[in-house]
Amino acid sequence: MRVVFLGPPGAGKGTQARRLSQLLGVPHISTGEMLRAAITQGTALGQTVRQYVEAGKLVPDVLMQELVRQRLSEPDAANGFVLDGYPRNVQQAQTLDEILGELGTRLDRAVLLDLDPDLLVERLSGRLVCPVCGANYHRRFNPPKHDSVCDRDGATLVQRADDRPGTVRARLEEYTKQMAPVTDYYRQRGLLAVVDASGTIDQVWRGLLRVLGLAEQAENVIEEG
Ligand code: AMP
Image (cartoon, rainbow, N blue to C red; front, side, top):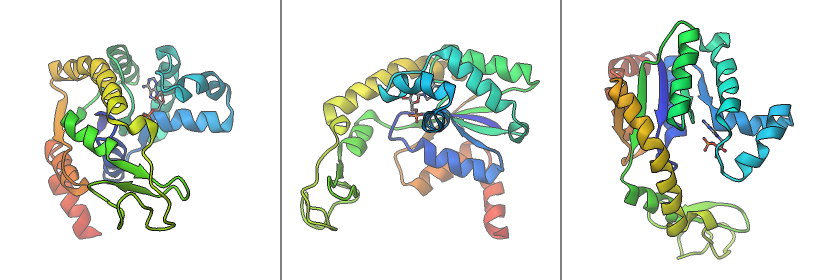
């Protein structure tokens, strides 16, 4: 099965994409992870894309196109893949169709992890972090024992600058502006599968299996395991 994952930051895309790739026995291809690896390794591509990734800007389509073409041409992706982080605009969605056409195949599904923007703001803006040990908390979903104090070392917890509600909303608006046409692109082609991402990881996973028609296959894997 050849699947792309769409969804805003905070919707749990990476987690679900990884699980699905394990169930299907196909690679999880995250363009963000590939770019970060290239930067760490100091490759020519890494040096070129560093400035974009560090500024949170999109890497130019021509560079992404080559990266994705090469990766999807590798033997382990011949029988399927779960692509996460690409496409991020309609141009990239068209390019992906072209690449798959060259490889003699096509996309089976585009999964959208859908979450109410208010819930996303709550998930991201409720996060607290310990400036001393780096432990993560959430005001509502994973609160510290004492208000705003780290359980481990007693330091006063802080909020990351980009997790403040105003910034989170701006990040989400930017995402919506770019991704709405991509969602439409797949809806018009009858490939879009929408999954409610507001529940727990396991609830979202079950919803994902249902829309992909894989619930039975997953049960067999659990029984065999
Ligand atoms: P991610 O881990 O998917 O959030 O991606 C991290 C960063 O990698 C993004 O902020 C972009 O700078 C870059 N990136 C990842 N995927 C793409 C893509 N499809 N097009 C352009 N830039 C991308």
